Length: 126
Image (cartoon, rainbow, N blue to C red):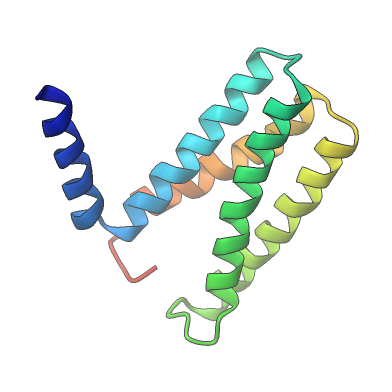
């Protein structure tokens, strides 16, 4: 019964949470996973690939959202996020091509910085 209540709470939280908070939490979770991989290096290639693929997919969604003509974000913000997304894609390919724990640092830091920024600004349409 306890698990059912927790699940109901999580579903309600997802439905009522601010999109910025959801994005920040997702980026923080991805950064945490990449940090865990870095801290426990070496890891299996499949474990690394799975974490990098998840991170890349999330960034692909962000880039698609900010490059959409209907995006409510100001042009400079959209450009910055798109440029970060391009960097994330390139860094992901770099890590996959020649895995090394220190190559994860940039991805971890970007996710943490963007998550912190999303949490610190007044709630706006994102």
